[in-house]
Length: 150
Image (cartoon, rainbow, N blue to C red; front, side, top):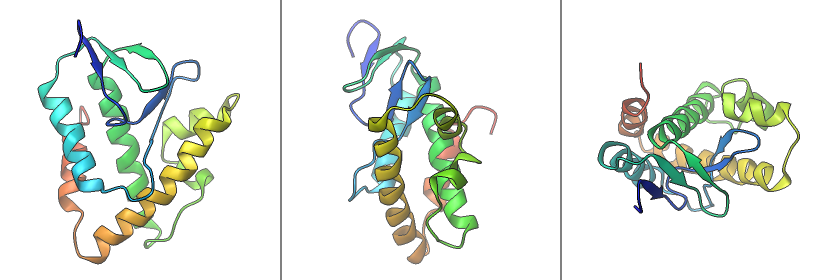
């Protein structure tokens, strides 16, 4: 942290200021449990006034970006669960993820769309793995703990 700015790498996703969209930056091979645990540690332990997003921008605010990304991840995994483990389409996800819906309703940036698509693949694969071993409740609990008013 530098003068109230938290430089987060990819720990809380990405942010496009022009579109006001938070998006996942989850590569293939994602391990959701440690990812969410890292998000929670940042949420509980870092006090910052601004966030430095890798390759993107500096944005005012910090915990609200973590909350938005937690909401997003929760919507994605709940959608996968509601489909019995099937991979949803981007359009199906947009019906439950306001960030993705906002992105799809505005002028689009191909780099952000690719991030959504690549992240969907990674999150679907990882969530399916977690659920097949009977897990996932701790991930859901941690995500909900970062959402104000849950």
